[in-house]
Image 1 (cartoon, helix red, strand yellow):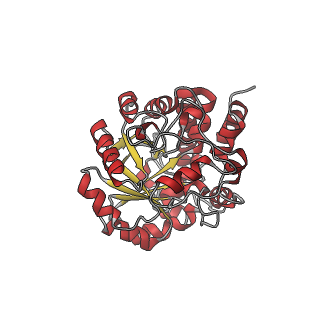
Image 2 (cartoon, one colour; image 1 turned 135 degrees about the horizontal axis):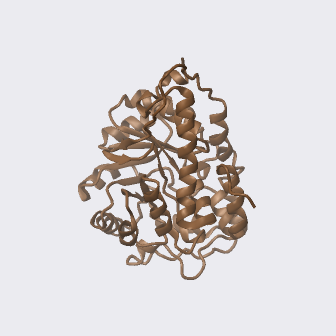
Image 3 (cartoon, helix red, strand yellow; image 1 turned 90 degrees about the vertical axis):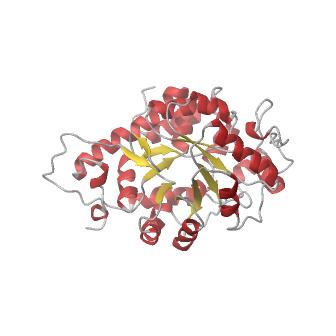
Length: 358
């Protein structure tokens, strides 16, 4: 079999290597999975009005996100349970992200201890946070990840309950023996067993995570950590403004990869309104549906500082561990570099909205 040329071919290669339960967990969305498709298809409707006769003999893809220097405006989104894809799990993923010169965001639902992940990293690591009903356990987790060397908290706010992912229900998804939510052992919240007739992860969320979360969580988090807080799961301009007013350093325009509310809008479609409302007061990241380098240009042109990719990293991990993750990110980087040249952009600062709305 020839080497994958793009992320779609990498996805097909990964499917062959994963168990059916793991594949369905990674690939699935909520309900009819329309939002998963909508995230990707929305990019197809956007055209790039390229510039000509611009000197693009040399291109600079580097950027910064919250002061972190990245080799490109592409970073790794938080995704759960990497050891379902590869025995090295999050250690392979963070090393692959470092090889690509970019940021890695570790999930609360990691199969690997945060201290090990940070120790294995050659680039910045942020931590994605779910807030548990047990605020003491949540506070202990926040203090632990800060002590470990994570440089920011990414608070996920779009999952008061888990979206109904019918493939996981059908498979009665649970973690196999030996795998758990590694950073919650001390609180007794590590196991995610399969549930009779239901997704074990959905049961885990319903039992342990706080569905009563309100905007009060931001001042509470700011009182227990010095880390900057990024609010993830925003699709409304007014929510973005409220997050920044509450002290957030940035937001992630995200619908959880189409895994929560199936009727959610595509993230690229709502990005311009959010960017206009934020008006440069905080940094904006975006995830959902990024599959080509040109997609990255569209997102930056419409107001994102950088994009986050989730499933493609898992496909790379399943296909080739650390090298596979670096390879997946490298595919996007090469496509972005070419697309920038063809758009007349010698560096990221030249990716402006007139490329989309001339």
